[in-house]
Length: 276
Image (cartoon, rainbow, N blue to C red; front, side, top):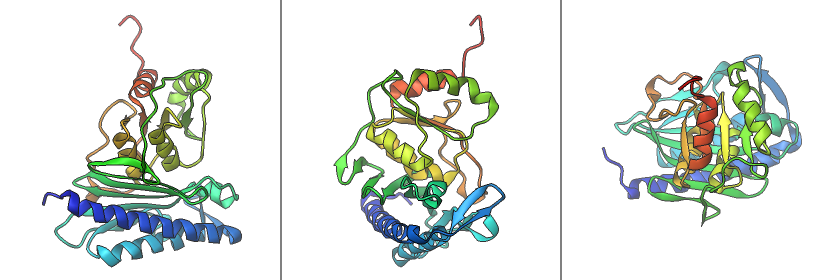
């Protein structure tokens, strides 16, 4: 089945509504945060499953046969509900991206909702409830912030521009990341989806995500690309299409940025051997 704009546009609207509902609930729950640790390394709060359920229930009102992949599942695992009909459409959800920030009362977190069809994102919504910022886009729809078009920056790395970097990165990337730190006013927001949204807006010129999972990037990737940017794996290869029927929580290290910055990042992470 080939999806038309008339099929996708209602999904974008549902995603906007669901993201706002979840974001508003998260702002209410932050007054009474209770935390626990899953998988011995990841923080989770009582608000995460509440907000996730709000999103899924809202989506199912309109699309009961669509599939879901979301961060908060049973026993610390992901939530995985395959599509039930012939339409292999998946909603990929991070109810609170930036949970560590959220748990400590740091208002730097977002709700991230992506819709994937044939292995590629077709809708992306990232909502920052603390600033009432709704980043949204869809296939053949411009990237927008609160209904105004946004574009990536034209700048490359210099002393006045910022690239976001993960909190934790593997040792083999230390050289490239130290170079970024030395050449830019680097940032770490603690919320991968928000960092991608700011790349799309042009506030960040690029982002290095070394440990993102699908729900961290599903919405942000299409947002950056529709804003004129580039998103690839860390070696410059395509991330999409993905086989969601066999997704079990794999990470997809990526580089995102405007065209100039992305090329610079790619060179740093993939240096040419000496003498070539």
